Image 1 (cartoon, helix red, strand yellow):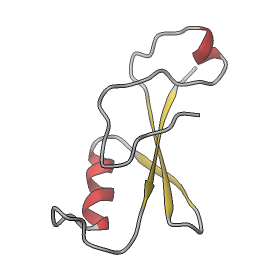
Image 2 (image 1 turned 45 degrees about the horizontal axis):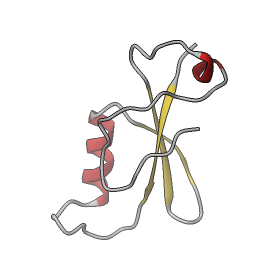
Image 3 (image 1 turned 120 degrees about the vertical axis):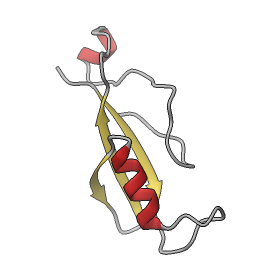
Length: 80
Protein backbone atom coordinates (compact mmCIF):
# COMPACT_ATOMS: atom_id res chain seq x y z
CA UNK A 1 0.00 0.00 0.00
CA UNK A 2 1.31 3.45 -0.90
CA UNK A 3 1.67 5.87 2.00
CA UNK A 4 1.27 9.55 1.15
CA UNK A 5 2.58 12.76 2.61
CA UNK A 6 0.34 15.82 2.22
CA UNK A 7 1.24 19.49 1.99
CA UNK A 8 -1.20 22.39 2.08
CA UNK A 9 -0.09 25.82 0.87
CA UNK A 10 -1.92 29.14 0.77
CA UNK A 11 -1.40 30.36 -2.78
CA UNK A 12 -1.89 33.96 -3.84
CA UNK A 13 -0.76 35.80 -6.92
CA UNK A 14 1.87 37.84 -5.09
CA UNK A 15 5.62 37.87 -4.92
CA UNK A 16 7.09 36.24 -1.83
CA UNK A 17 9.64 38.15 0.29
CA UNK A 18 12.59 36.29 -1.29
CA UNK A 19 11.38 37.19 -4.80
CA UNK A 20 9.81 33.79 -5.50
CA UNK A 21 6.52 33.87 -7.41
CA UNK A 22 3.62 31.42 -7.16
CA UNK A 23 4.80 29.77 -10.38
CA UNK A 24 8.32 29.42 -8.93
CA UNK A 25 6.91 27.84 -5.75
CA UNK A 26 4.70 25.34 -7.62
CA UNK A 27 7.55 24.42 -9.96
CA UNK A 28 9.89 23.92 -6.97
CA UNK A 29 7.34 21.67 -5.28
CA UNK A 30 6.97 19.68 -8.51
CA UNK A 31 10.74 19.18 -8.73
CA UNK A 32 10.63 17.91 -5.14
CA UNK A 33 8.06 15.27 -6.12
CA UNK A 34 4.88 17.06 -4.98
CA UNK A 35 1.78 16.76 -7.17
CA UNK A 36 -1.02 19.35 -7.03
CA UNK A 37 -4.17 17.34 -6.37
CA UNK A 38 -6.65 20.02 -5.34
CA UNK A 39 -7.39 23.69 -4.93
CA UNK A 40 -10.19 25.32 -2.97
CA UNK A 41 -12.02 28.67 -2.94
CA UNK A 42 -9.74 29.92 -0.14
CA UNK A 43 -6.63 29.74 -2.38
CA UNK A 44 -5.43 26.62 -0.59
CA UNK A 45 -3.42 24.27 -2.81
CA UNK A 46 -3.32 20.60 -1.82
CA UNK A 47 -0.22 18.62 -2.76
CA UNK A 48 0.76 15.02 -2.17
CA UNK A 49 3.72 12.74 -2.78
CA UNK A 50 4.44 9.11 -1.95
CA UNK A 51 6.58 8.32 1.03
CA UNK A 52 9.55 6.32 -0.29
CA UNK A 53 10.48 3.25 1.72
CA UNK A 54 7.82 4.01 4.32
CA UNK A 55 7.77 1.37 7.03
CA UNK A 56 4.64 -0.72 7.10
CA UNK A 57 3.09 -0.31 10.51
CA UNK A 58 -0.33 -0.15 12.09
CA UNK A 59 -0.81 3.60 11.50
CA UNK A 60 0.16 3.28 7.82
CA UNK A 61 -2.31 0.45 7.33
CA UNK A 62 -5.00 2.72 8.76
CA UNK A 63 -4.26 5.39 6.11
CA UNK A 64 -1.99 7.62 8.19
CA UNK A 65 1.28 8.60 6.49
CA UNK A 66 4.53 8.43 8.41
CA UNK A 67 6.30 11.70 9.23
CA UNK A 68 9.12 13.07 7.09
CA UNK A 69 11.77 15.56 8.04
CA UNK A 70 12.31 17.29 4.67
CA UNK A 71 9.55 19.88 4.53
CA UNK A 72 9.11 22.17 1.48
CA UNK A 73 8.10 25.80 1.42
CA UNK A 74 6.83 27.95 4.20
CA UNK A 75 3.67 26.21 5.38
CA UNK A 76 3.75 23.24 7.71
CA UNK A 77 2.51 20.06 5.99
CA UNK A 78 -0.41 18.16 7.40
CA UNK A 79 -0.93 14.47 6.90
CA UNK A 80 -4.21 12.67 6.33
